[in-house]
Structure formats: C-alpha cells, structure tokens
Image (tube, rainbow, N blue to C red):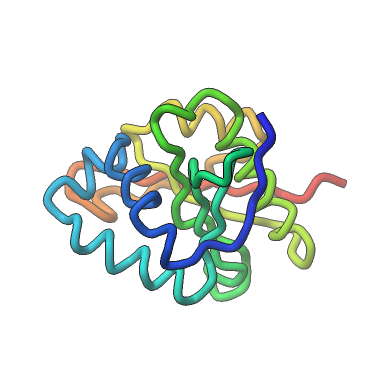
Length: 156
C-alpha cells in the first residue's frame, strides 16, 4: 500500500477522532471524554503538530502527533499515534513512526514516547523498532494505569 504523509488540517479531525475512539486508547481514556479528545486534537491540528497518513485514494487512514521539543522542553516527544481499525496491520503505524523518527533525529540524538501498560502490542512494536523503556509513571493519566517512558537513540 502506498502511503503519503502530509500535514493534518481541521478537515481531518473526524478521521483522527475515529482512529482513536476505535482503539484501546479510546476504550481506556476517551469513552467518556470525547469532548476532551476533540479539543486536544483541534489544538494539535492548529499547532500543525499532527501529520496524517493517506492511502492512494487520499483517504485519511491514520495520524501521528508529535512535538519536536516536547520531552523536557528539548527532545522530540510522540503524543499520539492511531490508525483506523480497517487499516491496522498493514504497515501504516510503522510508516508514521518512521516519519516521526526521521523528523526527530534531524536535530536531536534521542526521541521519546510513552505507552500505557495495557497497550502491549504497541509496546512490543516500539521495542522491535529499538525503543527502550527508561522509566514508569504509575497512575499518570488515569488511576490504575502506568505509562512506560520509552527512548530511542539515533542509530550511529
């Protein structure tokens, strides 16, 4: 599948919402907080921090949201990545992560993300791509859920 990654716009808000709400993140964090998710995604789109994956038909099939100085006000930090359910397992997430790494490693030697303890499949993907767990934040976003801080160092 050919995937193009472009800067997101407000026109992509509904597709981004759908990708998150129909995921484990949606189940654990946003089932009763859709309005909060909507506001957060709007903010990311307005700040031009969200990039979308499009298929050959121009359909938004997933997105990635990161800031280049979000971790410790100095290092790239991945806020959120989500792929629409019907496109999962087709390399869309890997392509989005590769885009994040390319942008992040342009100026910094380390990039960061967090992943929830319930999201084992995502954590396994990050580990397979060379991210290492460097810490845990218990009850960080929601009581009973730990977030694992992961870091990847630029390959030499």
